[in-house]
Length: 296
Image 1 (cartoon, helix red, strand yellow):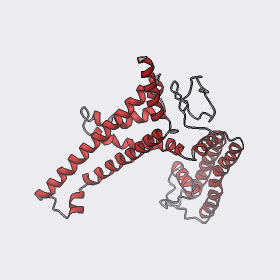
Image 2: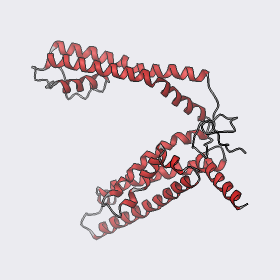
Image 3: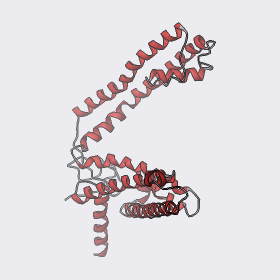
Image 4: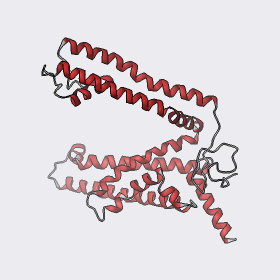
């Protein structure tokens, strides 16, 4: 009886933490997202105050006693706030490990590694001076926004987008390889034309860098052709850039159309045994390991 109660408790907590089909699961995910954003804002504000915001925002002299007092209050506030956030993230990390039947599945998963890296810096500060600055890694946890998107009608759309990107990765890889080779060729040509004109094309790698910047229509302006032939070729590269940028969009859009034709409704159910996601709405068992899924 005790084992069943324990199992039920773990299953219920797993459903809240890993899924978003229930009201408590939605509240947990939204609260987690707010906490992540809050922690990143704290890191940003702390960096501002470390650069001397006391004098600028409070009109105080850097050498005044009041200025030193305000700086001390800021430091204490941010220190305490960081530890509060770190402890909350630590409890969440432990809860995620405990509620999974195979903890290693989560610990070594993509999100598991991100969660660990975003939690450990404050603890390392006891052993490595300055390591607390690595709390900026918490920005990586914003990638959980893709799970938060499942709270509403975007659940199917986010899944379809991922499938379209996976289906088009081979075509996009070939396209990027072609663009890279093209930039090498064009950069080499520009080096041969502009190399003796003292216009900045001092080597083939630097010329290739210019070709990439021009092809992507960024145009920093640190290097520019000065000969008529070089300017003519640069104009052609600029025009090519506009058409080349549109190609990946067309590839992904085509795959999106194909995916939408075979659209399957999925939910946020996460297998308690192997952490597999994207199960169909009417699925009762995990498609990956066969473990029974949660059902209301």
